[in-house]
Image (cartoon, rainbow over all chains, first blue to last red):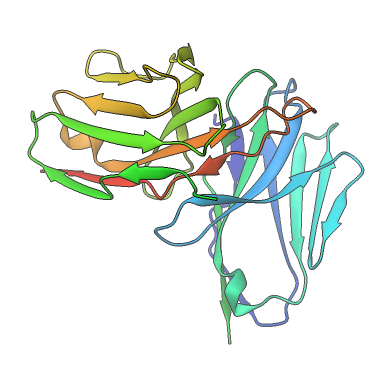
Length: 109
Length: 117
């Protein structure tokens, strides 16, 4: 079983739609959580950190449920430019990041 | 500010040949990572350096892979000999210490796409 599990998708949604991704992690010692975005044939880039109380950055909302060991990302009012792969990432302090396989999002006009 | 620089961007070699990748991290970043990314997968750590010291190389296939970061700045990853299954994207990343442990942002380079024929 992978340490970080994500639905690979693809999620095909129309512009303006709201879409949500979940991921689960297996290591209960995980302490930091992130969402990274990776465009096709590009490197991953940090989208946002995920905090226990939940946090929002514009159209993006991230939530963490430590008891159930899952993380979510909500994208409101989807734009064509949101089309990418979204990588769920967890970290045990003192170790390198552990990446999920990613969820592919395709926003259609 | 310049980002993480990697070269070459693309490399095609025949199996059993050696290959080397080079990475120059963001200035001032003392932590450097090498990741391998296969198609449809997330990056997987190969090795992590704190300055010139390899602090985590548990996932590095040491029979054919080697890495060095002699002066604690740029780094080289080598494969010798390459196998067909080594075809992947090799990503380098760097980060600097943050006040809150575990919240370091990793900045990735563009990667080297390796194709082994």
